[in-house]
Length: 326
Image (cartoon, rainbow, N blue to C red; front, top):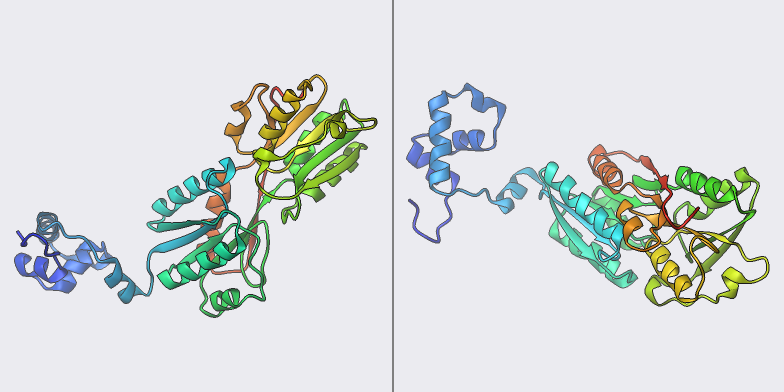
């Protein structure tokens, strides 16, 4: 047994097994050439490695292979249902791919987003999944990523020369609007200003296909828990009595806000949110929603990281009608 505090090396295992270090490396790294060794030799090497509690050095592997085994992910807010689920599925994908995931949550601060990129580059990650929309092709960090050929996957926004994964809202919005248009000729859309996704074009396209009028209302900021909306926006003359909310948990806050104003859901106002499946049952009435497929989004992101090519993958959405619409 190695002295306590001393980390066993390939040489230590080789010495006890009576072979050279390269043979130990073949076995422990499961190289095809190891199959040429006698089974008892392979078994002895593995048993000695376990006895010495051998752990491979990530730093040594990085020097040897030129890869760190780490993937960086920059996300705005992991407290959000959508982004927490994206992060959880990214962790699962990293594990399946034999990678470690470094997650940087930035609270939607552009300064923190760029600092997170700097830190990931300094850590020597093998690729980056960048979810915020703040990185531009003119920024020096983007030029560094491109010049060093570090795989970068962006979300809902395409940068030159890099792949991107998109949440395609067209199908989910089309199904949701068609459901609402059966009873309403005017449908409202409420979303955060400055969206980089295809939500608003998808909403307008769906309204046009159903022959109804689409009213777009945008608000500033990302903290939906404190926004205040005038009842006239929903109950005034000509106000839409059906709304599609495109900003994640904003549909929950909006539903509670309307209920506190004495507005009946779905009796007076029908409401559809946009988020992950578990959002639906968090309120009463349960929130109908356009569903986002986080698992498919992260599978696509990891596929693009390993693809080495400029490509875009569009992941479709669906629609789940629940208690907030008739």
